[in-house]
Amino acid sequence: MALTARTAEAGCFAPAGALQLAPGVTEPYRTGAPQLAGYRNGPNLRRLPPGKIEPAVTAEEDALVWEAHARRGSRPAFPPPAAFLPPQDPLWAEVVDFLATRLRAEDRVLAPPSLWGALPEGPALSDVFKGSYGWIVVHKGEIGPQDLAFCQRLLRQAVPVLANAVFVVWCARPQADLPDISESPHFEAYCVRLRELAMQNRQPAARFSAWSARLAGLGRVALRHLPRSLHAYSAARTRQSCYHMPLFMLRPPADPALPHLFASPSIARPVSQLCTHEQFQEPDYARLCAMLGEAPVHPPHRKQWEFCFILAAIEAAGLLRPGLRAVGFGTGKEPMPAALAAQGLDVVATDAPPELHVASGWARSSQHSSGVLELHRSRLLSREVFLRRVSHRPVDMNAIPADLTGFDIAWSACALEHLGSLRHGLDFIGNSLGCLRPGGLAVHTTEFNLVSDTRTVQHAGLSLYRKCDIEEFLSRMRAAGHDVWPLNLHPGSTPLDEVIDLPPFPLRHTTPHLKLEVRRYVSTSIGLVIRKAGAPEQGQPRPTT
Image 1 (cartoon, helix red, strand yellow):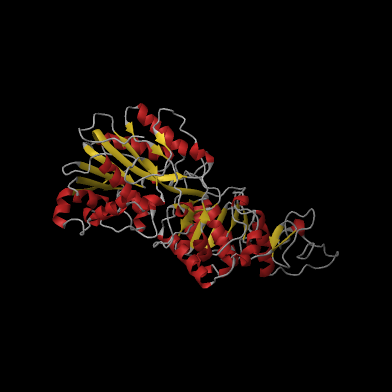
Image 2 (cartoon, helix red, strand yellow):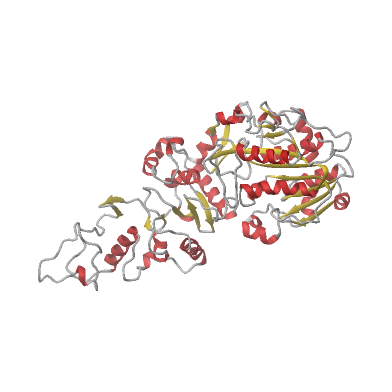
């Protein structure tokens, strides 16, 4: 990765024969620095005998002096040599500009030396795989087989915050204002590169043990929670991690009035529940997939479960009937609008306005929708019937238009966790009830944190909801008079419910994707169902505990 391993001497990293500082010397010698006249490059920067003429300083010595400064976070009085200056290229300039406004004096930056000369003074710079770093810059074109373990460690201990055709920039101390680029095509290309290397270099984990030891200080996460040996990506995809339910999942809600249960969830009897493998094996699951125009996926994938769960909840509420109206948020190109239209419902599908897609990076992912025909499924209904029943409009989920009202159903599938924070997503669910008639149904799926009820991910582009977040919100909805369906946080009990899919995630999955590792946490999908306050129409059932 253009990051060459070096040795540690005298408190800084330097190549063999590099400039070393003698005690009491605060700046290496260079022509034009009279306070250090008489010192020269050497093991101890020894003073030359009186009368001895100092030889001319070479370009190589200038580079060593500049490098020694940069590793300490300072800068010499003379300009950086060419080796420490990036080429005149907008992709390199993009990285420099991004870091220039975010680096702090106490940061340590791991980056190719060719970027050093353009970075601000203060942060210590390194190209050494040792110690801990706040920022890491990876040159995608320089990744080799020897870097597989390091790149895998980055996926566990840092967050990608910038990706372009040349670089991926990682932050080990994520901040709320940093972008989420996990869906960026440039980051996907980086992941593809790792997969190719892993397939070409099937090396046992023991081959990475030395790298693991040298990387032991990277990031802020305690490594005792990680495997002792690192595996290449291909080995990790075969092995996968194993999920063990923490005890807090068994704790009843703090609000005793909140309806809840703890039993294996069923797609045939939906409540507010988690995605589990047993639901894929129920006869109703195949029936719901057929309503989506799909076959059940193998291996099981939680995204398909989300659509089936939404359909199951609408059906259980007695609202899957012709003539009713439904509004979907953040629909992308999902099959739900066509599936509901095929059942005779009138549907308004919404997705973020173009300016939001561009700003968030979704425009490059080809997952958003900008027109109604992108949602048509010819196997479910004809184009003419589809256009008569389905319309499309841009909507910012953080600012739902006041005229979007009078619906019987409001839904979203794993969209609300991308709205900016935990609070933004929960506020959206509450605001979506304003789109409904009395007795209308809101069904939303989102990310659920399976391993912690105290710490979580809250990022501008992604938030993982904890048990306490969900319970507190549902208690507020119940206190407001809404009908909250029982909360069931049973995580499943089959062998596939123990499998944790590891990043990077390929576009075509060959392993179960029910639980996944997200920035050092384990997440799965949760479906939440709330019926708006008001008398439901006669004949519409309500689930019971």
